[in-house]
Image 1 (spheres, helix red, strand yellow):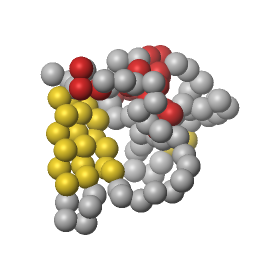
Image 2 (cartoon, one colour; image 1 turned 60 degrees about the vertical axis):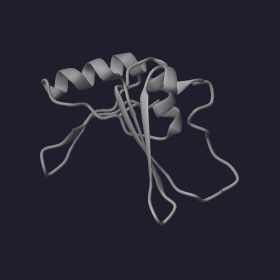
Image 3 (cartoon, rainbow, N blue to C red; image 1 turned 180 degrees about the vertical axis):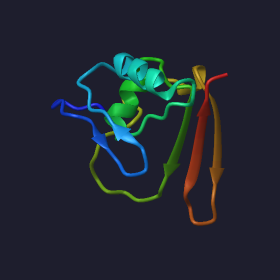
Image 4 (cartoon, rainbow, N blue to C red; image 1 turned 135 degrees about the vertical axis):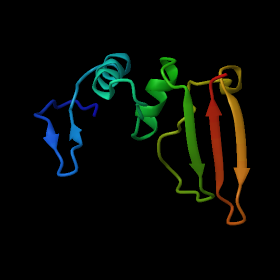
Length: 107
């Protein structure tokens, strides 16, 4: 996990260990890839973390769920990330409830 306050790892009962890093997205991804030993690495977090990884060109696949609720404030994911269609194939699937699943895949 990226954090501004590094701390000792936390081991969970199921075998997952959370490591806390104060690092750039590229450095954090390198640590995660080593720990994953060839398996997929997933990036989770809020829009600021996601935007940092996307801007650094480190994300191959994105799945966003857009819910039609206006809250009036928050952090916008795509600020500063113009033209995602230049780097990703984009698929949008809407559901009857109004939720839209957006999938971005690097070709």
